[in-house]
Amino acid sequence: MKRSNGGGRSGAFLSLDANLELLKKTGQLDPFQYGKILVNSRQNLIDSIEQYEFIYDVLYEAVLCNLHPIKLHELKERSNLYKNKNARQLMETQDSHENKLLQMLTPTLRIGDCAGGHRLENRGKNRDVMVVPPDHARPYLQTLHGESKDYTYINAVEVDGYTRKSEFIVTQWPKQQTVDSFWTLVFDHSCHTVVNLTNPSNPKHYPPFIHNKGKQNYGPFVVEVINYQQYPGITSHMVKIMKRRGYSDVAKLLNVSRNYMSEHRELSTQMEKLTFMISEIMQSGASQAQLEAEVKICCVLSVKMWPIEHKVPLSTASLVDLIRMTRSWKKRAPDRPETKPTIVMSHNGYSRCGIFIAANVCIDQMDMDREVDVFHAVKMIRINRPQLIDIKDEYKYLYDLMLHWYMTSPEYRIYDNDDTTTNTTEDNVDSSISISRVDNTPFQDVSSTRSSTKERKN
Image 1 (cartoon, rainbow, N blue to C red):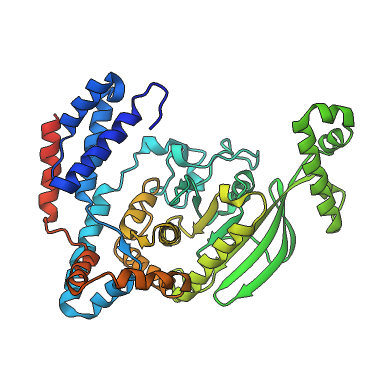
Image 2 (image 1 turned 135 degrees about the vertical axis):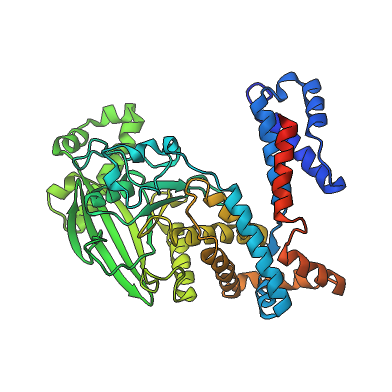
């Protein structure tokens, strides 16, 4: 661990690591005693009451959520447990237990946390006044557009992925007055992919935000559809987004002398990018006005197999295809897509979005660790938008979706024999227990444990 003064976060990490190892070996925790050891070693390793409370909170959550990832081949075994009456009751008990934990551990956002979305000039931009992004996690718009006093606001929120912070941006279907803001979001944050999970039938309530061919103006942007494809259950729009720009700015860059550019490498790089951009547009037969534009490429993928009144899609196979298409485009999109966010949108800005994001988090975990932890994936993505993942229907569907992904991905098959041949008959029995992951401690008792912990801290 490394920190500027050798303390702070380093002490918290060391204390947590030591206590979790102690918990694994003895079933006990002793943060106070280990805290004394740290302070004796270096005084500032634990330098505030807040840090000490944080250690207790993390350890409490680790004990409370004693749910472990399951191996990939166990996904099918877990699904089969629902076919047996007794095992199904066990699984339903487990699901209920996990749902209660998620509800209890999901943070509550106060009005003060979401002050931007509750300002008078921004209230009309929200479809649901109860679903407003916290200020610390909303993507701010930079391009001046529209007539609102606050052009920086859009009802959207950043959500972390498995390996990268703010890997996704969740937003609602744009309202009539926020369609320009939607394309500003795509452009300002260089989003390479938009995943639209709603296929509404009421254009008055859900105005179209994209067309099928040609060019169309959206505020300060010209959006050109350069490729439109229809697949079973999915449509794809490849679009070129051009931000209009004053011709004098372009001419100023084009007339810079070579000597000046050689002395100013950064400006030279900008010049090269601009020249390439203009040549690309000219090859596509653009007009002079479009030569004054900045250009970005984005792929908009929309579902057709998910009616607005259904909580889960009609076809899991089509949703899997959508995830594969998104991940494939992310690998080959221009301008370093691995560092750019993916926009995920639905009619209300939370339904369905959680399924797509949690599925991608779980898939990344499967690829890297050969295991999956749906519970902690859902817990993580609900931090900035608590409404993500309907606890009853969408949460259970996530397990089915992950099983479908696993069964249709041959690259995972090579690990099956390694995992299964090492198990004895007794191990298989233990495996069934670990798949259900039911904590024998009643939920009410766990809650009371937290109260007693707080009393000791006070």
